[in-house]
Amino acid sequence: GHEMILGINHDATFGPMLMLGFGGIHVEVNPDVALSPVPLDKDGASALLDRLAGRALLDGVRGEGPADVDALLDLVVKLSQFAADHGDVIGELDLNPVLVHTKGVSVVDALLVKRS
Image (cartoon, rainbow, N blue to C red; front, side, top):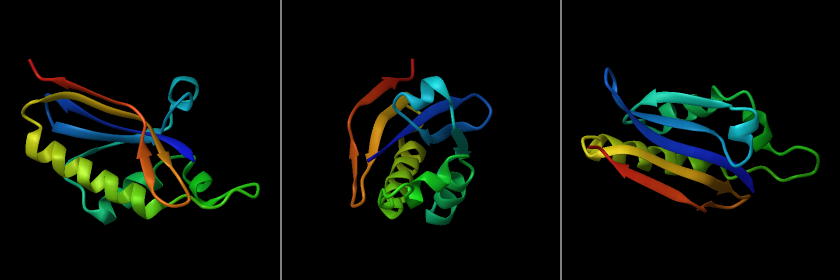
């Protein structure tokens, strides 16, 4: 599957912000991420995903099947609602990597830091 990163950070001006990008080693070597205030609906999540330079990779390249973009968008919407509901206590939340398979997504690792 494709490695993605999803995260929540608290911005002093905008409040909880959701980050979406290509994750795993990609985020360290060639950051391709987009940020948005929360909450997001499915259209907002799709627009956020479309801001990524590597977006076309999820459609399938070099014989690899397309990724389950709908499952990824569902996760983005749910995480953004979680951030909207609990942004007052979330300092940072990182899901990296999130594997986007041809069917479904898997969160491999997560880190949650409470606001102090």
